[in-house]
Image 1: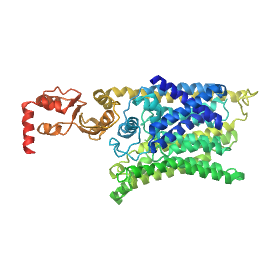
Image 2: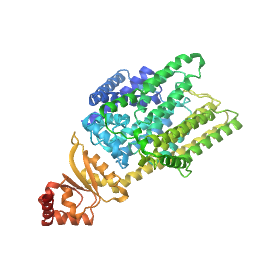
Image 3: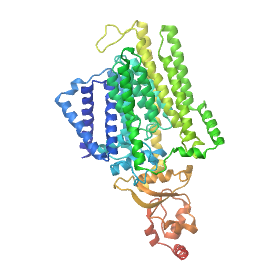
Image 4: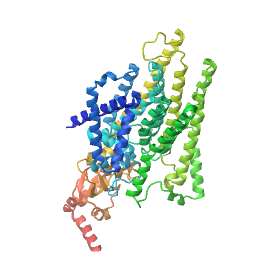
Length: 616
């Protein structure tokens, strides 16, 4: 049955690819992203209408009908291939990374505190979280990517690796869409140049990587894909509108800050719409339609949250402003400015390095080739975007974020990574366009009589390909090896220890309301910062999980009587001694049922228990 589901899922996607290609005649590079965005947004609407599981089967069925149509029309004959070398490299790289993700486990804190547990809740209940979803703490976080992962896991299987694999497919579809900006499909240098730029973006995502469900990397790469779509169809904005309705609509519900990234894409759309003065009115209308429709999903989400979770306190409530004094605000501003201009930070170095390189490139091209690149205009526009984003983030820390988190700029590195990736990626896209326009001889899809101006320029071309290819391979290997290293650390990580005791439970559709007390050391504050509790909550799908790093002998029996299970994740000498002394148990790592413990109480434990009963 599992293999049948996998085959149907793949065939369904092929069906969607072919239908979109046939009906809308869009570039093949944009088809996967358009398909995935369409499926995700429709799944999201299904969740809002409380038909989450039903809508996935309907979507699968529509895709299978498309696949039947593909077979009838012999659609494989319509497949257009530009650079075979590029497609070969892209496919090999994608398979390597996705294969690794499939074998990966969660380690990052936020996978257990929200992004992983919310998908697990949806898969087990086949519904969006509601008031009864007591395992979910952050109920106002949008469910954009969770809907895509839910759709994929519904047919491909339930596991941590599968969740990462499905999200990885989406990320690579965004990268693939970025290459749609290349019009001279036979110029491999353009692919290598853009590929090298994309690979360098991973440097700014190194603290998160793609081996977790955090969406901070998805925000900029989706926006970059949007830039590519808008530029490619700058003379066919109706076609761009069809794609952007789904892609940008999804972007608004990837994360609450997604609306800001959508705004960046829409501003570029409006800018493009005003270039051609002859059809300004028509393009203005199109821009306005996109502006309205792309924000519908996030507006519906706000309505949903206000209706389902009315009266529930949410994170980033503006009420937190009242707790900040003028001195505290000044402290936040000082730390923010200091962090923003910290030249030991990878993000700060990236911004200045890419900007300086871009300016030098424009100057060299102007002096040597006597050409003006549009990259200079892009630098100015992107600098404005950068400043606006940082001002917005500062405002969030001051007005929306809880004081204890704002005082140390919680999540600052992730927030800045997103905008730095967008900034650097946009420069690379613009430079790719300028490079494409700099070739004196244009190449089409058919054999060209002449591809280079001279033998000398051909040599430069070939050397550039070798250098950029080496840069891409080195950077991607570094990213791949980093992910492998992270996964190798899993064997000694806390999630692995918890899973070894509790297992990753998927065998029930309701939240486990039993009371669990989990014992482990407080190494790296793993108990006091709730890391242990969130991991156990995810593994057991339980809503009442407390953590403990030390037992107090005088209160041991009194403590345990309030729980149903004791989970020993990391044993130690004191814990083993107490469990042996009071309950005749070894104290090794496993789950102990408290009722069974009380049946094996020693005289010392019975005496303590009797004292508790007398006091009560």
